[in-house]
Length: 216
Ligand code: ADP
Figure 1: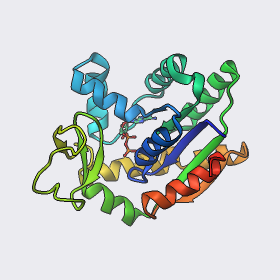
Figure 2: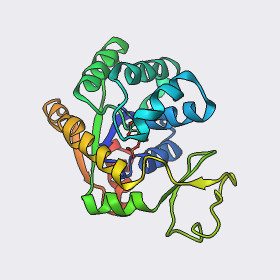
Figure 3: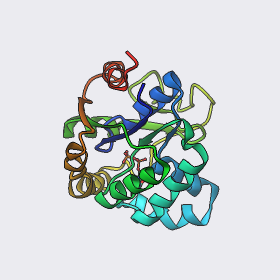
Figure 4: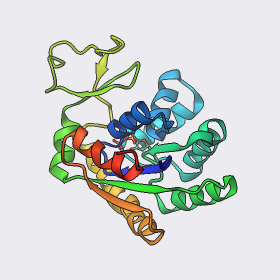
């Protein structure tokens, strides 16, 4: 079974949801620079504070900062494979990742692109709620979260991400089109790219991913 993969796609394409399902089902460790940086901000570390403004405006954090996070994470947790959610997001990050993995002799096996329409992105992000304590993601339209915004798993507060507002989302989409979309070609040339229709429900998408991993 394949155990070294990156999940790519627009904001709201379902990368975080699928990464969570992959780790729960197959035990492959997952990391997301966005989640790490949000936690750093909540903890008030200098990294969290320095990057918060960029994130709040929908820009991309400098490549060197992100690559260092990933390199540190791989050193500690990378022995049993990895799923990266939201990394790489630029060509420089993809090239750095390739070089790091060559050094570790653990080449990437899959680059999965979750393709979604702009309508899906806007629908999902406008209703997205996230638990501030455990990171669980849901929607205002699921259950009765609109009235009672409490996480069903840990009872933490369910909140809107401050970069989910519609003008910030537009900036994130612009960054995605300009800097992340060119990665499709990079991974296509390496024979690693697989595109999946991410507009469907989470189980249907997960079924396709499981087949690509060689697990179904
Ligand atoms: P989404 O996929 O919904 O945009 P993420 O949690 O992956 O959410 O990212 C949130 C923010 O964190 C991004 O808008 C960006 O500012 C920053 N970020 C996350 N990953 C990267 C990355 N690989 N390179 C640069 N910035 C990143």
